[in-house]
Length: 508
Image (cartoon, rainbow, N blue to C red):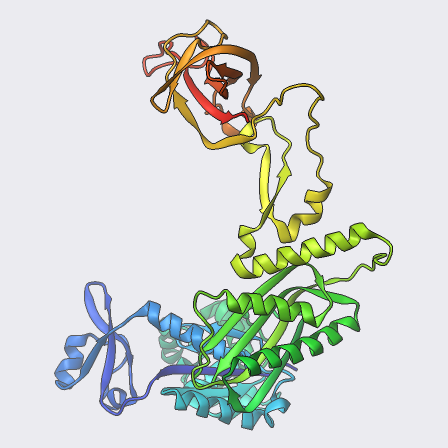
């Protein structure tokens, strides 16, 4: 049976009546309020003008929805220390799946008390509860905070609560009260078919989950890693030496766990939990499954040294976690006699170190593509993931004693050139101007006609005729005419227009 922890009503504690307002239909209404304001009879959705009439000394703050979401996300990151299965329950709540985790903190009661006290020290007021279903736990936070309900006791625990505690919406809550169903117990006493016919299947399912009759799974913010190891400290650590030593020990434990199942890590994440609630996560990737702790140490050392925002321990880290979020089965290879395998290992290790320092997307390999379009014939891919494919890629073979058909350098975008005249319909130019310099043509090879992929670009690109050109100074260009004479180039009135000319690359 799963056990769920729900915390809601996260907000800074304050002893003076304060409210947060938001604009709704060109009017300011209460978006959130503290206990002092609630005792005065104020409520969420009330117009600000009415609230000021009831309490002239009321403190009013503008709502910042983005900042609230960021704060809730930061609290969820901090809650990862209790369980990796943390889900958001907007706008102010969190779900924690603590199945199998409570005994690590001395039981469910101790876990609840630890979490509430820790958030309280950070200045938050927390309403929390534990139950066998997520909906029941959320309902308890609204009416009976700090409750712990045993499996099977969900219906009895919420029986006396008002129907509004289910959070089904004001329209359904009003309809239930008008029907004489004021408490959840009153609604549960009616047959499910009757409730469904009157209020819909969605509310009927919500009620069943609140009563412990099944439950919908939560949606964790992060996927569950394949392997997790962590170290908690009674006294926080803050020095680089202790951090490096802790990561090394965790790496040994992680490698030992993966080795039992013949796996290696491709993606690793180190999370550092500060005593003030701030969490910093650092991720590294490897081109091949990592099976040695010294490799993990080296990757994280490179990553930590290259951080633009250095790892700030503040008052210290009270927990460090190392997880392998992506693993693969390790394929054994003959390494003692095969020098090629050793070379591949060294190259892969070098790529991993460079990627850890400057980012994996900046270290690329080039792969051939099945297309005749020059600018699309090569694809740049991350080297960590496509190194093996790059080594096995087959490139067009150059004919011996023949000049290259393609230049060594292609421009990112073809640059336009001015051609005063050229042989019609498919001849080369006699001279052209590029970058304000006039080039007289002395030698020409071509044309090489390349038609665009009509099934992809809907006829938006024109047929190209490429020429290999050499000028009087020995410079060699790769130019093309974009479009066919009297075949593809027309103006708005449908009259033929001269096609454009471009230089696409330079030969060595």
